[in-house]
Image (cartoon, rainbow, N blue to C red; front, side, top):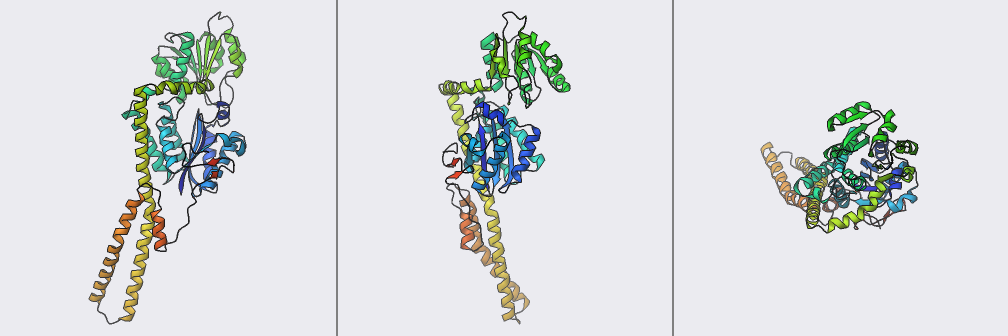
Amino acid sequence: MSLLAVGVSHQTAPVALLEQFAMGADDRVKALHELVGSDHVSEALVLATCNRIEVFAEVDRFHGGVTDVGRVLARQAGATVEELSPYVTVHYEDQAVAHLFTVAAGLDSMVVGETQVLGQLRAAYALAREEGTVGRALHPVAQRALRVGKRVHSETGIDKAGASLVSVALDRAEARIGSLTGRRVLVVGAGSMGALAATTLARRGADVVVASRTEVSAQRLAETVGGRPAPMERMAEELAAADVLLTCTGATGLVVGTDVVAAAMTGRGDRPLVVVDLALPRDVDPGVAALPGVHVVDLALLQGERAAADGRAATSPVAVDDINSARAMIEAETALLRAERRAAEVGPTVSALRSQAAEVVDAELLRLAGRLPDLDSRARAEIARTVRRVVDKLLHEPTVRVKELAATPGGTDYAGALRALFGLGFDADVTPGAGRLADAVTVDPDRPGGTA
């Protein structure tokens, strides 16, 4: 069995395509069970955020696993595997582990160093546990990823190298209308992103109004940040008085239409409105951007500015040092987990070898009893102890060494060699060379990013 990561993110795909992958709670549950119900996937975890959807799976065959995961992703996006292939990345074994750790640390986020993805990973793992789609293989990987992400943020200054997606978006809003202190901001959505947005706005001194399809959630969040709730039915009225509209719901369709925003702009004079849409798929009708006095900040805009932000971060010695420290930490944790996984994989082989040896000893002692029936019980017991002691001593060194060697880098299948030498029987592994996502994506596990 081997770990596989297959996905699409802001690194490889435009926001318009990422919108096609938007998943609600039911969609995630369906995808999890569809994955583990396929031919080659035994465990699965789905990480779906505003800028990525990635499947981390334990598979029995590399190519078969890639094909199974690719089909589930294609179904979710309403596209063919061939249409998705240019945007899909594939990571295998150590690279899959390192990639998951990198994501958990916020190094692969649209805004480097952000922490929200760590919470999203924790939620994805919790859902997979609830649905029973993670087991002995993915449990330690997911748990280690969460610890790595937390450790990177606590032991490095990576948080200073970047900011949350919400903070960056609000910076864009302030560039348009000035400081948010005392400004009325309507937050639509009271989920995790909405809570992060409302909290960030409160810290910037904004007058926060929270609207949500669930009034209780809106009330709770508004009280937390010192704001006030508002029913969704009064959105047009609230929007007319707002300086900023920030949306981040989990809806699968548009929440704010062009007509609603156009009506809110009536009678405002020269007072502009900044619309910050952080939802995927988007909450606000794209036509809003054409309205006079309306400035839109969305994921597509932030994605386009990422390269420039990366370039600015690269000029900061502090940012470079923190990012390098984080990457070194990820590399060390990946090596440690690899050693633990390989040592665990050797366990069944060692047990099989000792079982085989015990069977040989028992057979030979039985044969001895048949040839020397008059041997007294005391001598027979001493012979049995001596034979077993000799066998144990002969097996001790190779079994200890095979566990040590399996934990070392290099990829040599010492357990497989032991099974072959002692005739224990084993299935040949299928290692990825030029694998394809259903004959569409060329996979190169030795290249960062996984696709060629």
